[in-house]
Length: 408
Ligand SMILES: Cc1ncc(COP(=O)(O)O)c(C=O)c1O
Image 1 (tube, rainbow, N blue to C red):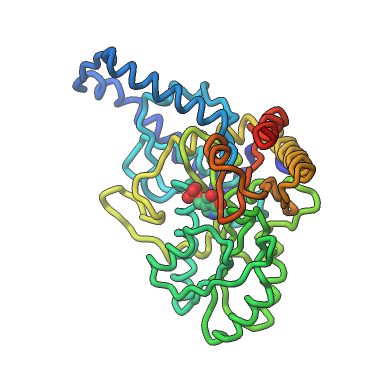
Image 2: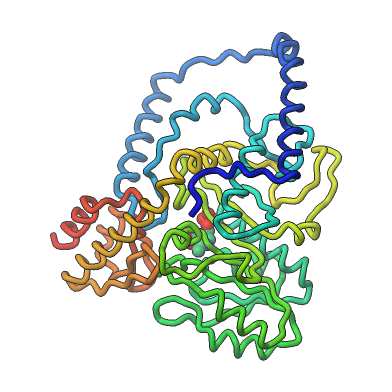
């Protein structure tokens, strides 16, 4: 199991590191001259009225955070050591492994995070970057799949996140929706039938490493088996927004391994398991594929290999800090969430709320309670069901409070 940011640098990464330090030494020399010539804007403190507005906003946010239970956001974090960095604009525009013209980046830390995640998913020749969120990771991967296999049809289950259908529409890729089993996992037999109908087309298959509503895991192995037996060229994308960081730490869980399976990519959200004051995500793929999305741009002095231009260097800093300071306790964090999810499941079962808790998941689904409770606890709902995603901030005390509300 991984414990800390990987220090084993390959030759390529060593060269990158050397490039970074040369760059910074050169930049340091000219910094004073630039400072002396800079224009200074006068900043006055916020007026009484504006302070009042900020106070009201802060109060509402504090209350909402306290009772946020329906969405997979880890609000239990402390990034106060990073406050000094708020004075800089941190922008990782351009290719994640190229310096480009813009020096105000955190790309060296970003690459350390990518290497750490690559180890977690047993990906040797990795490529990746910090995205704006899970949706951008999905978009990058399906775009990549389409560039690799231009004739491909996209397959995903009914329980898939809504971003996938939107991406199919944006990229004008034919999209086939596969039935889900009642607990949310893809119906492998239906997938096989639909693939067979289009056996003369390549396939991009989106697999959910934890569906949005029920936390069900689509298994990689049976899907690879089907595709290989049918001899259909494929690109498998694992949407591991939350589960991508749970499964590696759950003993009996299926492995997410680029070494064991011919998967093409995985997307993980940053604000979910890692926790962050701003949304972000990570996309990881095999380096050999990425030449398909690469365009030299003189303006930034780098290749354009990502979806957005400007990218948040601050998000990379949050991710790096989370891994650097907490990675040794990630396994314990996952275990506590799993145990607390089981506790919530048992308490709901006792009071007749028909709970469902999938294997390898911390998402507890149950009968939709009153509107008042849904609003107070900001529950995600779908038809007659609701769920709570047990994250690091959902303690047993909070679960007890929620059950008290249901019984009141
Ligand atoms: C399975 C899955 N994929 C993708 C996303 C989208 O993530 P984001 O909101 O970071 O774009 C979510 C969000 O909940 C999700 O549950």
